[in-house]
Amino acid sequence: MKTPSILPVSEAEGKKWPQFLAATLASLAVFTTGLHTGWPAPSLPKLLSDEYPYDISNDEASYVTIIGHLGNLCGGLLGTTLLDKIGRKKTILAIAVPQLVSFLLIILSYQLMELLYIARFVGGVAEGMTFTIIPIYIAEIAEPSIRGTLGTLISVTCMFGIVYANVVGSYLSIKITATTFLVFPALFILLFWKMPESPYYLLMMNKQDEAEAALKFLRRKASVGQELTLLIKDVNRQMSESGTFKDIFTIDSNRKAFLLMIGTRVVQQWTGVSAFGLYIQLLLGEATDALSPQIGSTILLFIQLIMAVLSTFFVDKSGRKPLLLFSTGGCCLNLLIQAVYFGLKEHTTVDVSVLNWFPLVMMILFVVLFSTGLGVVVNILNSEIFSASIKAKCVCLVNIIFALGMMSTTKFYQATADAFGLTVPYASFGLISLGGCVFLYLFIPETKGKSLEEIQQQLKGRKSRSSMMVKA
Image (cartoon, rainbow, N blue to C red):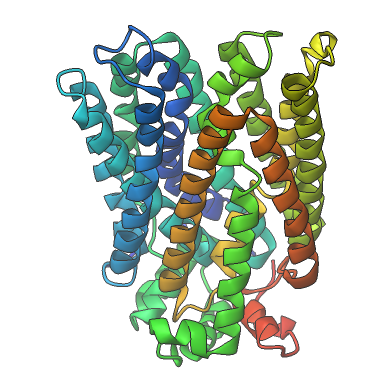
């Protein structure tokens, strides 16, 4: 199937905006995933109140949040299965199906409460597919000079979804909120189906003519012969490896990339970010009365959104590793300071009421620090560090670690906060982040401005071949 010719092809040097267009429209699915991710924050207080027609305990409410991560595991496996069989584009379009079903089941849960658990699981399936597939698609359609910037769209659109869910969900009922959510998966299908398939995938399937058409669409050039030749060479070299699960562990560069991404995902999640996001309104209600939980959480999310947008301007200039180190180190210090505050408040007679504003200010600072690196760079690395032959399998396995990290940190936060107060989860997250700084400093490579093949050569310990790829 030929790439639709909805853009005129230019004889000039080419343009980058078609890549931004394709990445942005693909990221509409990430926006809807943000709705799923952000839904618990305003909805948990409602589930625990008389507004919802069923009585739900704190423990049951925690499983409403966690079961979505189980769906995430299944979604990652499903996305990986489809990714190399039906292609990146068709698999991305398929994400809309569980998204629609999830929101419909939330509406129907007013008649049968158990449907709420199924809804969250199905939404998690869509989430797992989203974060397995879309980073790969964006990395494969982008030129090296803007790959980082396009990769940040995933974080930006996800944050837009989370903010929308928080604002709308805070002031509308759970049923009406879910009803408004149904619009977005339908809109995504309508807008994205005209976008091209990944040239990498087309070359993997030996569809050279279609890959050339896709490149012309994405680069807006009449001739892409030089880049196509290099891509063919790169894809053939990477696909010369058999691409089995065994190759992840037996080929040194694959094993190195895999372990690096597992470590980075663990560091990201054990800052506690997922737990804070899911419990933000309940957390602010316990920690401070400086502002209402609804207003405080909205402020935090808007700041995170602003930082995600700002990151698009510097992620391809500052480099991946410096941003990760700054972000993780800042989060570590922030969390340990908050642990001291909660320790004084909960376990001593020291009066800290004069610092009632402190938890909100520190959470705002945490959001800023997390967003500058861990919030955007990890997704970019996950999309660019794996060889084409094992990319789908590796991203799936890393996504499983990601989902387990979200599940474990969320449950850890709820269990330790209920049993010991906020001191223990904050201190634990801070100390783990300290270890994360050491890991990132010692092992994470810099991938800024490198082609996907150059990154593979770097992992193999070979000299970078900067002349291999057409640079913008």
